[in-house]
Amino acid sequence: MKTIKNIGLFLFLIGLVIFSGTVLFGDFHTTAKDIDTFLAQKGYKNEYIKDFLTENLAGKKEVSIFEFSKSVQTAVAAANQHYEQQIARYDAEKNWDKKGEQYQYIIYDKPHTISFELAKKVGTGFVKNNPMLLWILTFGLGILGGVMYILPDLILLGPKGIKNDGIYVHASTSRGWIAWLVLLYLVVFYLALYFLPDYLVNWTFILDPFSIFLNGNPASQWFVYGFLYCIVMLVMAIRMYIKYRHNKYQIIRTTSVLFFQIVFAFLIPELMASLNMPGYDFKNAFPLDYDFFFEWNLENLRNSGAIGLFILVWGTVLTVIIVPVMVYFFGKRWYCSWVCGCGGLAETLGDPYRQHSDKSLKAWKLERWLIHSILVFSLVMTTVTLYCYFTGAYSFLGISSQWIKDTYSFVVGAWFAGVIGTGFYPIFGNRVWCRFGCPLAAYMGVVQRFKSRFRITTNGGQCISCGNCSTYCEQGIDVRAYAQKGENIVRASCVGCGICSAVCPRGVLKLENGPEKGRINPTEILLGNDVDLLQLLNDK
Image (cartoon, rainbow, N blue to C red; front, top):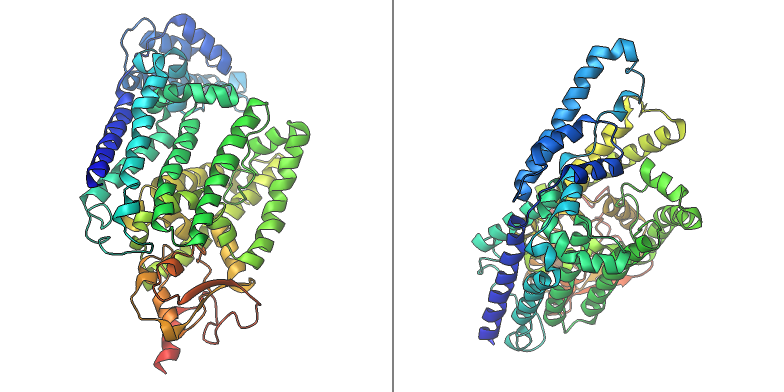
């Protein structure tokens, strides 16, 4: 069995190396005609970019994606600089200081996005010409290797149940060198995905057949991400099924997050796009779906007829009514642990790292300040955006609509949710984003803390203080401290994953949805079930 695991690991690594190495291949040479056609499609009024692109790219052979990207960046910067100088020189004569008039000549699209779109049209080479072969050598080997590495655990793990030995021994699960390599790879991947999409254009060539089949269009970097997201969750879900095969709650919960990610977050939006509808994830609630009320999305929905109106109404009802009502009856677990794609990835790919969640008081204080600050940030951003949308203004109370949207998208949407939220799994635990950053989790947490039927009950008389529950709590809750006292666990951050109950050898912990009366213990007063106050009362 260990031989099978080693072969599986070898195949997975081969697939990963080939997948990563494909970014280095391909030719991206273009012609003046290609450039003319591309710029006409983009509708740029900045005519000088054509001269700069032609000078830097047209006629050159064997151009790598890195050279290609650099040439496009140079062309965009030079063309914009030229017009900025013209605007400054002829401002009074042409009245280019009027709002909006000068902006039609400046290119605001990100250079790497322009580079990606052009490279997608002119790229050639082995990867583009052999997508299915490359899929087998990358995704195929990765899936096969991953399954071969995981399946022998059915036998090696022995009888049903959780064995916690070894998690702080292996370099991959104890913040060792393997964990740091995984962190580095994930961080680089997310940086390229968000900020350097042109470097990943060969990955989109590999998945073009799948994208064309689903939505009729070549793959984008976001299709690659969605496809890869689903594949990773599927493979790692096999591990979850094996590890927690003694617990029906975990089996059903894992199946649920797979279903909602693959069907609702991936397949339905892609099929909607193929029908010229807005690609929409019907389970994604605001403010996690932070751009739902952005001007471009509202306009897109308004121009999409009945389906657009339905999405607008559904998204609003989901946020204002369905989310708090469901949290009242079932706690935030109904979303965070059963529906959400972020939670789904955290519970599958991130499960080996859940023991790294910081349980200290300092971490808890940081968590409460940070996650609620981001919730306020998202609400302010949405208020400014809607005010400017309906009034036609550019700012509200001195806050620029474009600035606050760009800032939130960059800091929270890209860096926190992506680069940090997932990239830091191996070192800081699998729920960094959910615990410290997700504004929807903060919103649901407030409801769960003060107006919900959900709690985790404990039986202190049976607790043997083994600490499994606290070790495996991905939200940084010291579950054992509650269990030893026989107190209900009512915390805004608890996502009800149920792992604490699954790893308890004595059945001390139970997830319940009972009457509100008696849910909160007498010592649990003030906001956030304050640890300092609890300690003070215990000392007395």
